[in-house]
Image (cartoon, rainbow, N blue to C red):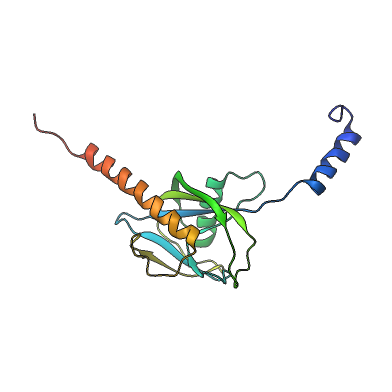
Length: 168
């Protein structure tokens, strides 16, 4: 009935916006370079863990994998291939957090271009060993890196097998 009469449909939509729960969703990319290192950024606006994976908030109607691509282009002028989702979990808060508790999605990504520069949101970047990032990272991001490293190892092993020829 509500779908057939536009004014009633608008009222129902408005009521749904008021009473429906709102959840924040963030997406990050675990970007590997050709040497198997992971990209970390020093974020200007993250107060709890300034160093972390590149990413940002998923916009309404946006696919989270596209969020990762968009954020990397905005923050670094970087292009990546977003491959597998490697982790999904609740990102909590600590005393110094400025972000809300939210759902986090992490994706394994492969580098397809070079970093062109830093945006105002980014203070610096570095490529690190995924087994020892040497930075204080949020628990969500530590887990994302560990899971993406397993994915990277499997993909690298698969490429190595296809690049070798067996003797006849």
